[in-house]
Image (spheres, rainbow, N blue to C red):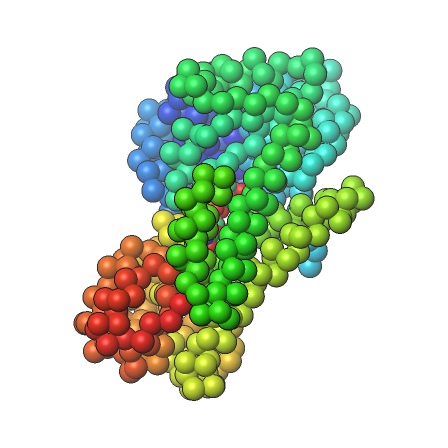
Length: 433
Ligand code: UGA
C-alpha cells in the first residue's frame, strides 16, 4: 500500500522504515532540510540500533523516499500517518500541539481524493475529535477521516517494537474505513496474532497516555521505596527482586536509581495532568504530581550525595559523569537525568567531565559549558567522585582496578545500580548507590 509518514524524528523515521520493511511504498515528509538530506541519503540523524541498515536498504530500493513537500505528500497516497513531536509547552504542563495542528492545516487543503489520517503522535485525549472537525472545515470536496493509532515503541528497541508490537491500538470514529485499512497495513503482524484493540479515538488516546503514566508511576514507586530503604538501611534492589516475582507486580520497570527522563514519560505525565484539569478531573491524577516530585528528587539527591562525598562542598572539585543519554542504547538527551545532574553539579562550582558512548554531540548542544572527555577513563582522570548515571554496558565492563589509578579518590556512585559493587569494593573503591 502507498502511504505517507509526516515527521521523520525518532518515531516517524522508524515507522517509515518499518512500513517499507512490511512491503509498503512509503513517502516520508521531513521539514528540517538537514535532517531530510541525511535521511534521503540513507543516514539516520540519531542513534537507534538496527534502524540505519533498515532505512538504507529501503532508500536504496526506492520503497522509501523522502521529501519536504506537502504537495508531493497529498499527491502520493490516501493514507497519512502523523508522527510529529508533541513536546511540553514552554512554562506550562500541557502538550504543544502546534506541529500536529500544522500537519493537518497544511495537508488537508491539498487533498484532492478522500483520505485517511492516522495519528501516531502522543496527544491529549480529545485531539482526534478536534482535528477531525478542523479537517472537515479545511477539506475541499473530499472526505477526510481521522483516527488515532498510538505507538508504544521504546527508543533503543524502536525497530523491534514497531515490527513486533505487544499490541496494536486503533481509535476510529464510527462509519469510517480506518479499521479495514489498518488490517491491510498491519496484516503481517495480525497474522502473528498480535492483539488488535479497535476502539474510539478518545479511548485510544487514553490508552497511550495511561500506559506511559503507569510506567512512570512504577518507576517512581520503587524510587519512593528506595528513599525509605535509604532511611532504614535496607536494600531496594532486593525489595524489587522479591516483589517482582509476584506476577501481578512484575520485575520490569522496577529499577530504582536516578529515575526517568527522555522525550516521553516526563512530558506525558505533565500533559496528562494538564488535560485532566481541563476536563475537570484534575483530582483523579493528582498522584502524578507526586510521581513527578519523587522522580525529580532523585536528581537533587544525586547532587547532594556528590557534594557530601566531596566533604560538603563541590567548589573546585572534579566530578566524572559517566553517561549523558537518558537511557542506554540511545543518544537522546531530552530531559536526561544524567545531564541534568551534571549541569547542577557544575553550577555548584565543580568541574564536570562527561563521557557518553553515543550522546556527546547532543549533550554539547544542550550543555556546551561542561567538559567532554574522549573516553570513560579520560573523564575519570583526577576525579574526586565518579558518578555512573546511564547504565551503558561499557560502564559495567570498566576495570575498577585500572580506573582506581586514574582517579584522585576511588569513590563511585552507582546511580543506576548497574555495577558489580563487590568487584569495585575489592578494587579499593567506596561504592555508593
Ligand atoms: C517510553 C515507553 O516505555 C514506550 O512504551 C513509549 O512508546 C515511549 O515512552 C513513548 O511514549 O514514545 P522511552 O522514552 O524510549 O519509552 O524510554 P523507557 O524505556 O520507557 O525509559 C524511560 C526512562 O525511565 C529512562 O530514563 C530510563 O532510564 C528510566 N527507567 C526505566 C528507570 O529509571 N527505571 C526503570 O526500571 C525503567
